[in-house]
Structure formats: C-alpha cells, structure tokens
Image (cartoon, rainbow, N blue to C red; front, top):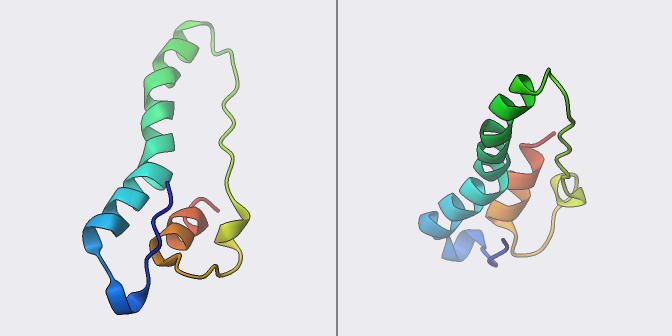
Length: 72
C-alpha cells in the first residue's frame, strides 16, 4: 500500500492505514499460521520481505518509509 503523503498535507488516517498494512499486516498473518505450524510438529518457515524504502528517503513517502523502517 502506498499513498503519497507529505508533512505539509499530513493525513493521520492515511498514515494509520499504511502502518496497519505494512507493520501489523505481517504480524496478523504470522499470528494466523503459527498455531498450525506448532501443531504440525513445529514445522515450516515464515519469510517476511521488507523494502529498501526503510533505508533511504523517498519523495512523498512520509508514512510509507516509516512503516518499512519499523521492520528492521
């Protein structure tokens, strides 16, 4: 999810949706599969892929960058 967002036109609802999608989304997905993985004799792997956006600034990406940086 990416919605252009700058400090001079900050929208908290857009920022919250971005954080929910990029940070809480993977956590929710893991929470759904962990119980079954544990029941299956502790087997399986989970891979969560981040973004280079967490390392350097992108234009109009105020919330997006923050949501990606929180993964590292």
